[in-house]
Amino acid sequence: MDTKYIIGIIVAIIVIVGAYLVLAGGGGGQEKITIVGSTSVQPVAEKLATEYMKKNSSVKITVQGGGSAVGLKSVQDGTASIGTSSKSLKANESQGLTKWEIGKDGIAIIVNKNNAINGLTIDQIKGILSGDITNWKEVGGADAKINVVVREEGSGTRDAVQEVVLGKTANGTKVAFVKEAIVQSSTEAVQQAVVQDPNAIGFISFAAVKDSKALQINNVAPTEATILDGTYKIQRPFIFLIKGDPNGAVKAFIDWVNGPEGQAIIKSEKVVPTGKVTSTS
Image 1 (cartoon, rainbow, N blue to C red):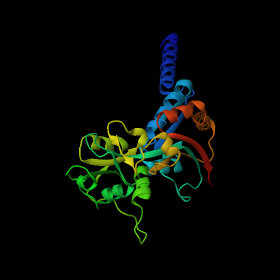
Image 2: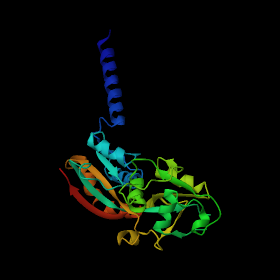
Image 3: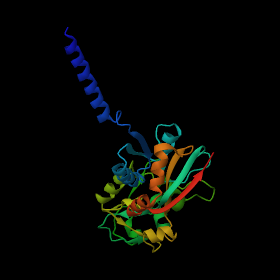
Image 4: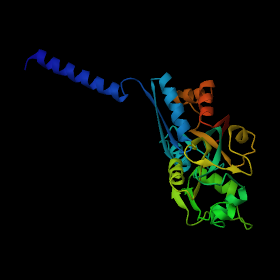
């Protein structure tokens, strides 16, 4: 075979392989960051990732949901660079992790926009979610059965509502959600279930409210101001989790998020920035 022909084939192969590596991110020196966890934190994490990549083309950030429990497990076992959680973690859960509270989020109690109810007390919400109150007329609404929509086990939103609203019985056991509750696996799924059902009630991140109606709680509406000053009582932290101390591309991303651009994005997503860092070992 002609030597020039063989050399031509080799050059062509090198060019093709090189092009493939560049397109796949392997030849351009791209550093990859994977963020996994809370579906409530997911929208703000996606916005942060998108804006950061516009300014840093050498970094590829992917964001996935799955729930707070998934985020915690993923960062612990090393399958995620950053885990996200929308619930406070116990000391034994966060062993060896750096926790960074990017902000505080109110949990909105939502109903269909056609529901005449505009506000409830925490005790009324507890009664509805636990099944003690089953008809809207019992809280001043229409004569209709209340359909409760909740998140799945492991959801940070569910855990926060469990802690802040339902609480525990006199003997120390958790007050259970009503058995007939419709279980959904994401923030958006809860909202859509409420949007489609005039008699439904659910709970989602205040930052995610768009097509449903957020109720006043004890005469206080969820806003950035009431979440920050604590007068809106149903709230929880948005947390980034990193195994050990952040370094390299992850540290650079975290530093940017903690800077003026990142903080402005967090605020634009209706999350109240706090930027509290706690290292655990």
